[in-house]
Image 1 (cartoon, rainbow over the protein chains, first blue to last red):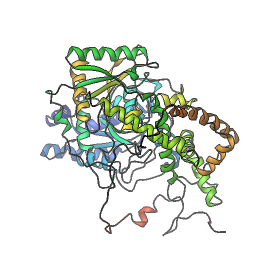
Image 2 (spheres, helix red, strand yellow):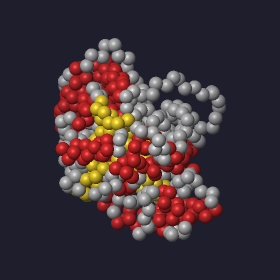
Image 3 (tube, rainbow over the protein chains, first blue to last red):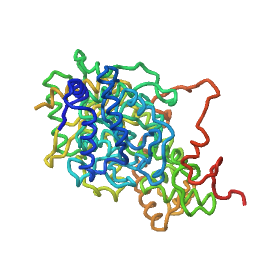
Image 4 (tube, rainbow over the protein chains, first blue to last red):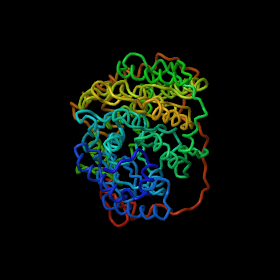
Length: 477
Length: 95
């Protein structure tokens, strides 16, 4: 079996002709077949990936290949790739084909990555367990009776099961970090606006972020470096200096100050996760990092705020699915109104409909001030908590999830309980700040435990820097 | 705040969704449970807080108003559930 720990090692081995890219892609494809039961992929691009492998191999030998030469990448099926299916794991888009390619995906292709397929996810990225897919749940590669987390469950499973090198996910309230934690891999949610959303099917437009899953911090940094940057097709993408994240990783001059938000260690956190995180904190102290307790007093309001605002945005964004111009149209379309209602009711799954209903309710006349405006005000308070914390420390260190991966079916009957599993991740999206999951070990059931690092807006390099120290110096024993 | 079955039916109408009788009952229960949790925000006094609609408070972004080629008609029609050579076809709108 071909093996390497990150992309720079892969490139070195390719240059030394230890294996060919075609062999590498074939190996991924046969592993995808072997682990079909995981249900990680919605579509595969077999012929094209193999052809690309040959092309990129030639570029490598000529020395003209891009930064991501030969990196095999899977894409969450909410991102558009021209002439490929874009289903959002929904029946309503089952037969939809994209007219153009998302900027984030195009940037990977331009750097000579190989796109191997599109991954399963919760329908329209709404969910915390990947059980809301119209094409069935994704199973956790670590334990197939358990969920991968969601909504980018297929992308997390694909990297964890070694079905690709890297994958792209999207994170609206934890949909990269939580499945990364449940599957035991790295996953980064960048600052809102750092990566263009052009070609991403909108769920909650003021929250959605695109980011990578990988098996090393180095690969996360490399892919982020390619993804980041302003795009004229996304007016909310920010004009900011482009940082060379992969070289910043070697900057060990800076001693980062670490903050521990006390609200994240309260009731509800699994004892085993708490002990494990505390042991990491202890090791950081031994390495002379300054560690201090901080407070994010509005943490307990995050879930309520998040679900008011995101369902409101979703109800508006998903109004476009009406059976008229694209997507599923019901046979029960005797009148225009009937066509809208039947197509939407038959095409959307139950969680998506529940969120559209909640969102429509909180935006409806008479409730707007009580819910939507109120939540926007609390959103500012939550953001202010972070601004205050980051005036004292560089990075916040927290658990990523209150529990390890739960059983398939365990929370499907109780939507509120499912929502509460996002308790440590939604705040970052409310504040628009970046966060990363670092796998730090296993619990007694051998299930991965995740640690979350958060930094101020556009300070991804701090997450990566501390991440790489954790990966290479703290978690090695 | 509690939501009634009749309100849920009205919201469904606004959202262009249809539900069976038992689905409405389930939804009313679920929505009430979730809204009850959302009512937690009333514990906070936010009277002087400016609403935050966007995590990065950017100003308007303008571009030059130039004529540029857009999606071609044949491409736009590619995913249509019903169409002729030029148009999307939908059920009769005016009686």
